[in-house]
Image 1 (cartoon, rainbow, N blue to C red):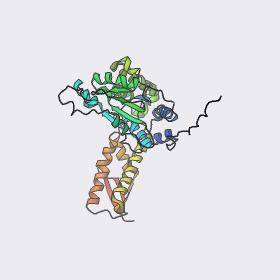
Image 2: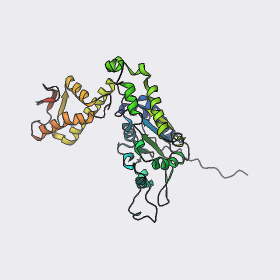
Image 3: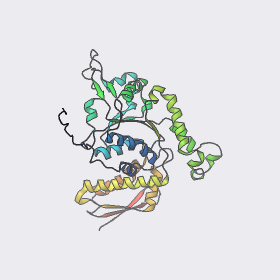
Length: 351
């Protein structure tokens, strides 16, 4: 006799409201690094489709490259797209764990140690779940500047990267199966800068535009430099548990200009949100934009100093004008380069 009918279960679509054009959204937020986005997005798609491997994290990425090229920004942008906030990240600053005994703060001290009840672990299931959202149950975990951590941290992470399990000091476990784990590092950054901007020989006397990156091996050469440093720093067991080592390329002048546009747009949005009926418009001349780019970007630090430069040269003078009542509501402020060519001068207009 035929058995009882099997009930038809409705298809689950837990991520139906996630943006399908994830690659485009990330590329619009992280400028100048399309190859990095193309390597990360497939792992998110595997998780959405339910095809991610069981018993290990969804993906483990080591992000290399010169400073100021967007490594940390990538994780923040992904958090913003998936969860609606750049802060939806479980972040571990590895510079705080340079001593062997400090690693205990990650998992908590075991019972029997003095003060073990007061040592709350940083990596718990509750905190991991706290960085998810209704849109996605995928947790993003960032270990920033992993090369600064004590060797005991990388040994501790072996089980997390391989089996997606972390055993805490109180003998409970944390499951990382629904997590993307990002490790950022500046390993090889000095050698990459030397490759890009030689400080000796004939090339050092030429302007940077005279020897483009492609002539010196391009991104493949930088990746080779970074990978060599990684293999010297970490054990083969640790390196083999990484799904993708992604090298970020130096930002082009066009990418830096786009990043400036983004940060200026963010400042204008901040002004409208905070000042409301007292909000005003900002208009920068091309020379003013050039000044911000000249002072806020460099081959060595990329776009890292750009936000501070905008704060000092633009936001703080505007704040002084607002505090002094010199900008009328819905007015316009035009910014241009001052006579000393090192600061901005402002002209306030009523609209």
